[in-house]
Each structure stands twice: as structure tokens, then as C-alpha cells.
Image (cartoon, rainbow, N blue to C red; front, side, top):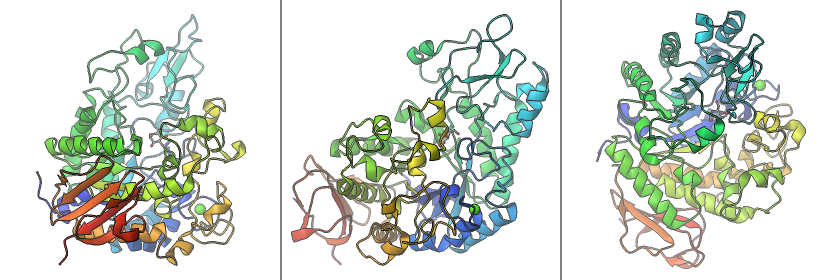
Length: 546
Ligand code: GLC
Ligand code: CA
């Protein structure tokens, strides 16, 4: 077990609290409705007061926003709609001055269809070097008029797009996101340059988008979608994802990371079969850390939480890393809302009902979300906080179809609403055209309830979710030491209770009846503790009396 302190320069990430900024929805300085880098710089105080260690910035690169910026035109520039490289440098400086590090999103699985490489590929002939940077295949039929396979893209619809000469290109996401060919050495070299470009600009680490998708086995004949779905191959041999050889790419990246002092860090977004498969992305010879979505996917249930925590702590110990804990991000229904719905609710169907069927119990949802967050903040490892969860924002499920931006909506033929409901711009003030997000209206409309949840309102209220997060982060910073945890041997079935070095205790009551509090001084709690007891859906931290 590592006894490293979170404050060690080279291992700052091991127990960091990382705040995810989805830049277009965070703060809009120039009033065009889209959040921008100057907006972020103007709100660094909020991040400092909240007490986060680092920011993870979702894509801010030039983009037509076919997929919210994950369609990147140029990996080494800033989208003119949201700023300039000089403004990026100002933002980094402001964050650094506030003691906050910066992780940027790297999108290696695909470029946008406006990337210079893709334009070159379209202009070049079939079989040319320019086309080899992507995945072009001849279509079926005499003139190649049918797609090379019946594969379905992640956002719906065919995963192949024709280019008019019998050739088709692969896109596992939107058609505006052609997949790169990672067997091409130029592709590999270019990303190493991109990593250096941002590391040289003061970036501390990278969040690696779709890290499991880069290596693909496209040896003909291509399997059908049904065959892919039924694939019963040994781990590491799946045709399109989580192939063993993907780790060779990250070993090369590691050499770049380790050429800096302190070494740059990375965290993989890898939606893979199992926690042990995920651990491979987190190895110190590879990316070093990986998002652990197991708590995000778990029901609000003590036994499930305990199991997930135990498994992930054990895995991170054996692979020499620290775990990550995540409940919300820009791709999923916000956790204050997930916990407001009955366990097992089909979230896609629920979104389709505009959030009415079943009706969420917002109060219970927020109460559980606070309890879950406080529990995760007590764990060894790093915790990711998605912008707005510190305000207890709910999912906005009733956005009208005409404002939806997620390609999922159109690509699924209007059957899946997609992810806009967690990307609604933040409310900073209780009044104003976009509640302080910017001087004008926001690119997605905010619901009336956001005014009450604004930073301005919550700052003035000691019981607010914002005040709670701020307290919890400050106490965590004070208490967090070595990365170990000891389970309480006699906790009741509905209770998750453990202690950390120094003797501080975290206890969560997943049940409905209050339970007695352990001895000690209450440091912070996710809800009031009437009669000195721990009510249902509540977490408390205690430390030994001085
Ligand atoms: C990742 C991102 C998601 C994006 C997709 C394609 O899953 O988190 O927002 O749509 O990759 O880049
Ligand atoms: Ca703007």
C-alpha cells in the first residue's frame, strides 16, 4: 500500500478532487450564449472557494459542435468561438495562481470531418496515404453502394458513411467524427506532438476520450453487428474495443508524460467489461488512472456500494494506482436525479417521457446524492465533481426537441433525447437573462428552478448544497492522508462504515430508520443529525475527540 501524501508533487493526482468543466455551459463572458475561456477565468474564485485540486476541461478545440466539441478540427488550437491560445494561457495562469491544476480532454479515437487530414483524405484517391489515416473500406455491391458492414454507431444509425467513389469511412460516433487508423505511424506521432504541445503550455494531465476504442481488428471479412453483439472471444480480443494492443499506444504516451517534471498524468475513459479490464488502463506504464464508473452505475444500496469499493480499492492497489470515484459527468443523467427515481428506472425511457414517468422525488434524490458524494469523498483515491453538482442541479429532462443539440436525438430518429439535460448552463445569479451565465441568453434554456439553485443564493445559505460541498472538500483536505481504509466489522446491513488513518470515520445510512452515531466529533454531515442519530440517506464524518 502506498503511503504517499496527496501533496507530493509527482503524485498530486492520487487523491485529488477534480472538477469537470464543460466549457460551453460554464460561463459566457462575451454574451454570445456559449461559455468561453474568459468566462472560466472570471470564475476561478468559485473553484478556489470550493476547494478543488484540479480542473478537467472538456474539449475547447475548434469544432463545429456536431458532438459538443468531441468533434475536433484541430487538436492544437482553441475554438475561436470560445477563445484564443492567449486566453488559454491566461486561464492556466489564473488557475495556477489559485493552486488549481489543469487536465485537458484528448480525443484520439476520431477527428472531426473538418480536420485538415479528413479534407485531405476526401480529396485523395482510394488507397492513398491520406485515406490510410482513417478507416476507409470499399462498400458492398458492384459499385460499393452498400456499407461494408451493418454496424450501428454509438449515437444510432450506420457506422459507415459513403464518400461517393465506392468507399465508406468508419465512424463509431457521429458521421462528423471519422475514426482514426491507429495502425498508421503518422497518427501515432501526431498525438505525441499534441500531448507535448499542451504539456509545454502548462497542462498537468490528460483525460483520454474513448481510451478503449483506438485499436481495432478490421481484418476481412468484417463480422456482422449480430456477430459483434454475440462475440464470445477471450478478453482483449474483441474486434472493435478494449483490445490488448491498445496499451502499446499508452506506453508510448507514458514516455512523453514521464519526460516532464512533475510527470504529466492521465485518466482513461474506458467503458470496458469489468473492473479488472479497466485496471489495465490505469497501470503506471500506461495512462496511470482510469475512470471507475461502478458507483455511477450502482443502485443506492449499501451492499452494492461496499462491493464496488472493495473491488476497486483492491484492484488499484495491485496495479499501483489509486481509484477514481465518479457520479456525474457530461454524458449521464445527473446523480441528484438518478437517485430521485426508483432503482432500475430505464433512464432513456424516462427522458423520453420528458422526466414525468416515473415522477422523480427530487428531495430524496438530492439527499442521497449528497450522502453518496460525502461517502466517495471519504474514500482513498480521487473524486471527480461535474460542474453544477455542487449546486445540486437536477437533470433538465423536459428540454423541447427544437433546442436539443446532442447528435443522439437526430441519429436515433427522435427516440433517444441524449445528454443535453446535464449540459444546461450553470446558474450563477438568481436573476438576469441567463442567471449570470452570461450577459445574454444561454445556448440551452435554463428551467425556472435554476434561480433558487444559483451560486448567489446558495452562498448566502449555510445549509445549501454549495456550502456542504465547500465544507466537505475543506475537511477532506485536512483529513486525507495515507491511502488505506478499514471497514467497521460490525456495521448493520444498511450501513457503510469505515475509518481512515488518523481515526476519522465515514458512516452512511442507506436505510430508512435512524442509526446511532459512532463516538467522536461530527466533522461534516450531508444532512442534519437530529437527536444525535444518523437518519436514512445520510452520511457523516466523525473524528476522535481531541
Ligand atoms: C466520450 C465523451 C462523449 C463523446 C464521445 C465521443 O464518451 O465523453 O461526450 O460523445 O466520447 O467522442
Ligand atoms: Ca461566449
